[in-house]
Image 1: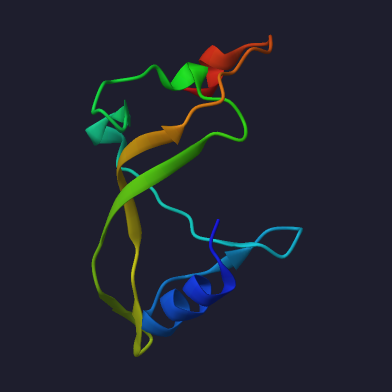
Image 2: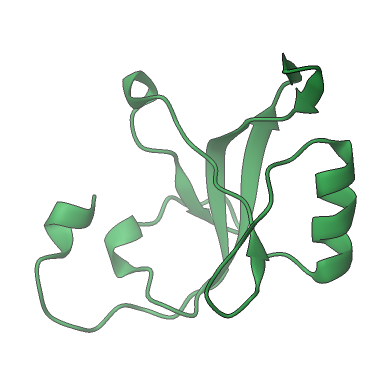
Length: 101
């Protein structure tokens, strides 16, 4: 999720900014399947099981972008490299979390 100021700046340089149903701005980052799952670590660079990361957890997302011209406009696709969990709220619910990862 992005602040309005950050979303505005990112849109101006070519990011594809989207809004959720509540009007909050965000971007979509992808990852090539051949690269496998991105590393998920703590701030101490200790690997963490992504299955325990619950809703409301805060993280830093490390991404790579590159410039692409589409229809004469600059676009900046976003690719997920790594996730660093800064505030963990552990997932404690039931259900089939295996299918999510």
